[in-house]
Length: 273
Image (cartoon, rainbow, N blue to C red; front, side, top):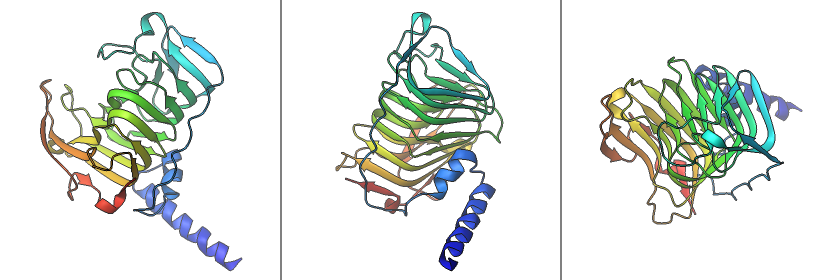
């Protein structure tokens, strides 16, 4: 009994400390359950089976909580594209503070999900990413975007496009066959300082990079308990630094690898099998 109280006390202290760092909601709960850095890779969780299909001809607007009950949502009509066009509309638009959960995005998925402010994506799965899986567009430095569980595959470029301001926390997520897991917008007309936390995730090759950030705008990326599968030659770049711009030009790559300012991780934070 005494031992249980000590464990509960330590957990409350950890939660309090994480909350002070701004990791809240579902992301806070997940982060508190992380395995130690450098833990041995575990089997990648199985994908869920979709429970029916729902065609989407017009973008679904979400305020509050939308529970898709694990149905497969696929675009039709004007949303029936899975190409790389930047002007595509999303299947879902989440208002500030909204939650989207238990959703499978099928093919085509158009431009996936747009978050206009703080949002939570809980147990959301992308079977074949089109342009982007999700784009985060809030303008407040206090905005928090939490991706909790779920997975994505078949992303020829980006999975999560971080165009807005604030903090993006990705936990208990899995990605396979992708370009970049998270990219801080390198050439948006309006630029911000962005914070990215990626922890307790499974990365399966092929892929190009886990996170890309703009060092000149003060972006930071923290990687913790990342498990990389099928990349024994370590070709996937964990964190890449760029010089971003607001002119629309292609950003300049500065380098890759850990550093104390921008790409915050150590080799023990990433395991390979």
